[in-house]
Image (cartoon, rainbow over all chains, first blue to last red; front, side, top):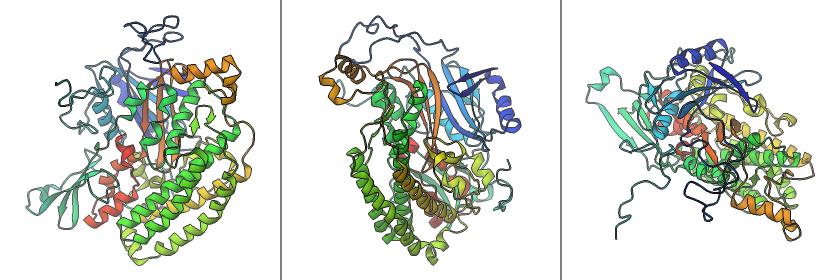
Length: 172
Length: 420
């Protein structure tokens, strides 16, 4: 477990096997009774662009694509590909907030928190639908925003924008 | 979770369905009978507020099973925002919830400002608060108009849209557009407020409370309205918290919680307003909360007009904020800054923040991750409507099919925000 403080926000990082335990502790002992949001993030290609000084991408400089200039400095590396952030709130004076964060790779699962906060139901379905993160023990692990037979997970970084199959495209 | 220990019990225990909290499953004894009819309600139905689909199991008139199906309006806003510079991504935010656009714009801009550590001048802060409250009135008016229309009070629609139009006129005066104004800029406002705005806004402040009197005279004690709203769609405080409900739905369940007061942002700690709370947890209570919020928002607008500070309306940071137009003709540096911001965009330091505001529908959150570059790495909106729809199964227990429309309406969902 690791606790970090950035921009006035507290982030508690836990290993996935202890996620439910941490969530119960935060809810029952520390009074974070309100799960506000579950946000999954894909860090594929994080920090892979060049550092300032070069202009361009691995294909070379492209004047027609803005924002191809590199970073001022490389961002800090991330431990795994995906993060799942649970934004918790205590409904009491001072409105304390904390971010509970778990890290997983593509084939790993996160324990579901539906039994801790029922509102996690749809949030976790969305994270599964958009990022392909599987939640172990979720009672209804299905897609929520995309069609049931949709292929791929649209918010992953390797899912191209405008990449959905369209009939007739490419046909003469 | 004793949030409001003095509240009366509206039902014993929890009514949240199990194991799936958002799906009401047909009882075992009814499942085998032939009397249960499954009806597809939506996605195209005049009373679903957009493209919500409810799969409803009916036993006679009674709703015995229910599952909400969403995603018909999924437009990939979050994916799109990752492809645009921070500057351009602001344009997407208001389109997510097309009834409370300024609040969406606000939460994204506040999140970026938090990452940048940017100080915003007080005139911009107060103006943002004023517009956010006008926007709350606008959103509640559209809710009242459509929710009443669905229950047969057709004239409400015309009265509410009369005042809504006045608000849109005010937005047009300030930003040039009636909806999706994109008036909030990182660092402040896009332009100064035109001088003619204050007089018009003061006129609106005078008219609006009388209009609310009119609405209340029409439906507040109307027998049909009371019959169709009281005691329906019950949600207890504990269930509401467990289901993550926020805003008017939570306050109508007896929980005294408003982010504007609990976690003041903008200048909400400097103005005087009351947070209405009702204990009944039914459709009527949600209606009452919104009606009183209309009056409270007018009060905030009035105070903001009266106490609006002067001075600059946008921060001075030239790395982030566009230079004044007239400088472009005389200053080389201004021209360079303008060019850089418009083409490449400004860079935001690496980090992640979660920013929240009280939108008309409840806690609107925005989680933003930056890798230090000119585009957001990840933007995730916590949409209060999305969460509100999770409560449909709980609210709809023992409801009749005709009540369903009143209950879904009372949750005040905007499908654009649900599906994003």
